[in-house]
Length: 328
Image (cartoon, rainbow, N blue to C red):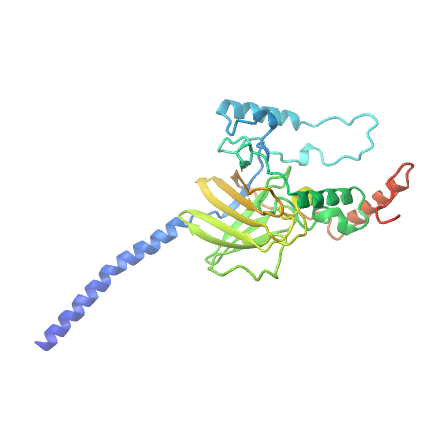
């Protein structure tokens, strides 16, 4: 009888254990299901402006007809213009090389900025405004390569961010997901941001990066990314590249989610009390792309930056030219 009882207990234990297995499998499957796949290449080019135009002050959303009309106006404004007689500026790329974006964001918002309610980036603090003024002034007549800004040095671009904002061309991203990380490869210049998903803490405050330190987690099917540890190398207003950080206090939260299989909703929240008078938020949609990302070589390792500085010095020698700022 003892042997029978023991066998009975073993059978009961095995049945109980087996009954748990489907639940575990189902639970694991559910966890896999909520982790949406963002793998692929995404394009953020859009006709929607970063800030809401003044004429749309109290209008956060377009109707479908209004969006179509706005797209028509944007396309018209981006048409190639003939050179103006007597123009001295050498100009830049023509529209063949541009990718301005022809459609508004899928959510039909009238601006990428969603908060404050007026769709405008909040004012800078007085200290940040002074930094912006000094950096903008330095870039008019840079005394050295370091004063040309991160973009002219081909070191960082606004599309890399974060936040990741569209530009007039090369607004493409390749997202690769693994068990412990999500990698965002940015087409413009060369950046690859690693978002750690293994539960680690942020880096020591002594370690600072242009794109910060990104830690991710899942909230349902939404990837939430918390980024800190920015350095103070620049800001989009005074540097024409890099991120929005004016100092080391920027805290950024991003959310990635799918509206459908081919539309990525990208949302971000910026909190930097040293730079802005209040926190602000934004969102845009990215379209899945079937193309490939090719190398964007910029002008690294050639003579463009040297020649830019030569041009500045030559302009200063012209009658009425502004002398270098580092001379009395």
